Length: 281
Ligand SMILES: NC(=O)c1ccc[n+]([C@@H]2O[C@H](COP(=O)([O-])OP(=O)(O)OC[C@H]3O[C@@H](n4cnc5c(N)ncnc54)[C@H](OP(=O)(O)O)[C@@H]3O)[C@@H](O)[C@H]2O)c1
Image (cartoon, rainbow, N blue to C red; front, side, top):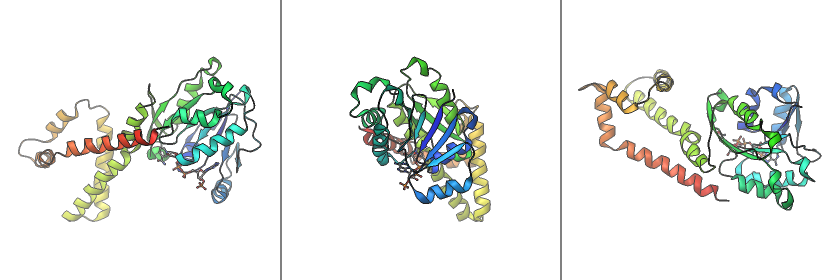
C-alpha cells in the first residue's frame, strides 16, 4: 500500500516541494492549511489526487502515513498537539518530517507523545533543512533521522525521494550537524545574494546599466557554481585565475589585505551559534 502524505501548512516551502514531488509515490496527498486566503489560492489550482483541508480534526492516521510539518517554528507545538489528539494507539502514529528550523526531534517527540508515554518508542521523527532554491529544484536539503521500526526500513528512501524533488540531499549522522547545514546552505543563498548585490552595485557605479550588470553577475555566479563541481582545490584555482600583475590579483590582494576570509568565517560562525541557541529544546 502506498503511503499517504500530509502537508501541514502550505506556505512557500510546502508549495515548492508539492509542485515538484512525484505524486505517483503516494496513495493520496492532503494539504492542511488553516489560512483561508491561502486555501482559496490552493483550490483555484485544482490539484489532482489532492485533498485540501483547513485542519487535521477528523483525520484517522495510520502508521504508514507521512506528515510533513511545514509551518513556522513557533507554530510547531500547536500542530503537534493537534496530532497528539488524534493518536489513540500504536497504529495511529504517523511518520513525522519537520522542516522547521531549530525545532529538535526531541522537542517534537515531547509535543506529540506528551501524555502518551507508553508510545515513546513507536514514533519516527525526521528533520529536513532545505533552502530557498527549492522552488527552482536547485536546493540542497540536510536530512536527519533514523527509522526505529523494521517495517519502515524503506522510509529513508521515500524521504530521500521527497527532498530530491527539490534538488540535492545530504543525510547527516548527528542532529547537531543540522546547525552546520543551517549556517552553510540554509542561510547560504543570502550570503551569495549579498555578493551578487555588491557586484551589481559596483558594476553600476563603474558605468553599466543595472540590467546588463545583473546579466554579467548572475551568469558569472551560475558558471562559477557549475565549474566548482569539478574543482577540488579552490585556493589553487584562484591563483591560476589571478595571474601576476593582473586584474584579478589586484582584487584578491585587496580582499586578503582586508581579511575578508576572516570576516566571512566569523559571519558563518555567528549563523551557526544562532542556530544552536534557538535549537535548545
Ligand atoms: N522558506 C524557506 O526558504 C525555508 C528554508 C528552510 C526551512 N524553512 C522552514 O519551513 C517552514 C515553513 O516556512 P514557510 O516560509 O513555507 O512558511 P509560511 O509561508 O509561513 O507557511 C506556513 C503556512 O502554514 C499555515 N499554518 C500555520 N499553522 C497551521 C496549522 N496549525 N495548520 C495548518 N496550517 C497552518 C500558515 O498560516 P498563517 O500564515 O495563517 O499562520 C502558513 O500559510 C518554517 O518552519 C521554516 O523554518 C523554510
